[in-house]
View 1 (tube, rainbow, N blue to C red):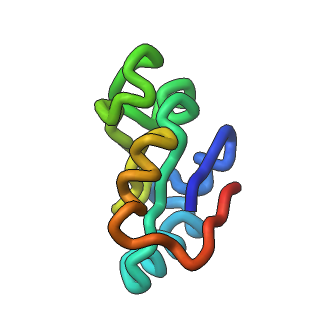
View 2: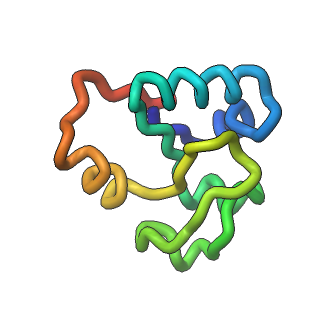
Length: 89
């Protein structure tokens, strides 16, 4: 699942929705990714807007297993195991 804009807030550590998603994602081997630029703007990532898209932005303050990235990182993550379904929120 790829999260944009204010939808990142549901993945904040301690949020009941995010915690349930993290558990399911771990059990089902699902990818939870947040837009790196959105995360930087909302304080949920270490990095700068200039680093967005490079893979150098790291998620912080979010439930376990969430990564920050942009489409290049998404395509790389999915490359060896193409998804059956892509969900964007």
